[in-house]
Amino acid sequence: MTVAAGPMRLDHALLADLRRAGGSRPVQLFWLVFACAALFLVVRRGPDMLSLLALIVAGTAAFALLAWWAGRMPGAHPVPDPVRSPRLEFVAAMVGYLGMVGGMFGLIAQGFSLTGAAILVGVGIALLSGTQPSDLRWVWRTWVPLLPLILGVAVPKALMLGPALLSGLLIALPGGILQQLLLQVGLTARLEAVTGRSDVAAVGAALAFGFVHTPLNMPQADGDVLIALANALVLQAPIGLVFCLGYLRHRAPLALGAVHALAMA
Image (cartoon, one colour):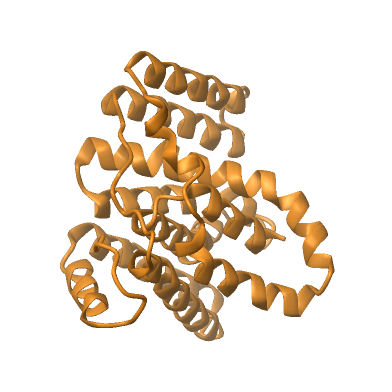
């Protein structure tokens, strides 16, 4: 899914990436899951859902283009950062994710504590595995390649909210950055290191990102867990895929955290 950085223009590289993605089984699986969830919502909530689904697809395509564009800009860094102990770090990431799911669904009383412990264990494994300061270049990596994506979210928000965007952004920034660190550094990068495939990492992390939002969709779903899950798979999962695409094109999760915060503000 990644292409080496080059001139900031749309050319045959986009079509080449689309052809590769279209032939990727994980990407095909993602859109099959999306289509099934969308069909379920149309059946349960009526044909009025079609216009909303079309808007979601169009928005996802537009922001995916901005995320893809990051890899074509000067300074883009699509090369994975080192993961010194992929399997053990991935296991820690999955334990943390399961703790988060258990906590959000109310299935594990101390789920979030388990997530915190898993993060500490994962960091400890990385340190004991010989992590070098150079492995943490993602912390200070330039945000410039992701500026189109940042502006693509910030400009409409600024037009809608005006000066109130700034206060909302300050409140949302810690959560947005934390979520992208967990999603990209904690899950996408570790899944990519274990499988050796960026498409598997992006799709797996995006579906996980969508699924964990299911409890948050319960009020809009009137308490129906299946509708809440379908909403997560047609709305939050594509958003997660855009974030993962942006990360694979330019490994700057802090910038993506700012994008996430803008979206939440």
